[in-house]
Length: 194
Figure 1 (tube, helix red, strand yellow):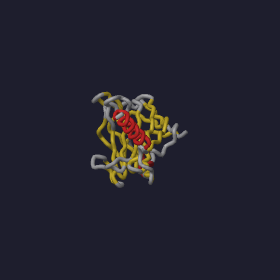
Figure 2: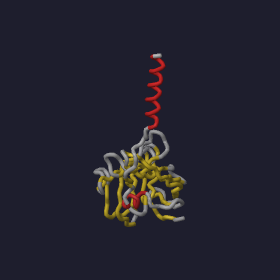
Figure 3: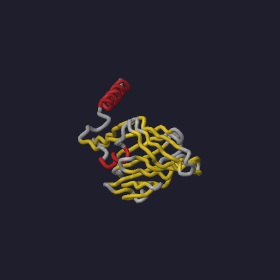
Figure 4: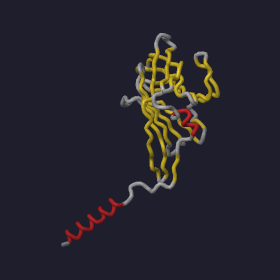
């Protein structure tokens, strides 16, 4: 009888715990700031970026935005919106850009390939200020063209490094890597909108 009572008590506790809400009730929503969207999110699926290699001017690459995948995180009742953008490359490696809100960081951005252990090119923004290791330029000249509001992280992965983003344009320059060797330094020459 004692075992029956303990079994019923245990099952009752298990049942009551399974009925509890797993996530706290949503009380507010935080989306990515318009500025971060202008750098990383505000592009149409089907947009193509055309690049020319500065090392071999007869070499080109086209990268297409194939999917924008929104996602939500419930952090203590605050719904935090984020995005993953999927890019397909003709010559360099396909990659994704993930942008979201972090616990200690207002916005975090990871640019990565699907290769396990490859790492990511990262950017962080705290209350409108870029992290110390992110270089910001009001304007910069790359391949005789002036770009405005440019950020760069010169570190990289085994397939991507030296990535430059311009607000409203996306990636304007990146190194296509093979291990520790630079295969191509691609700079933007055209954007084709769908």
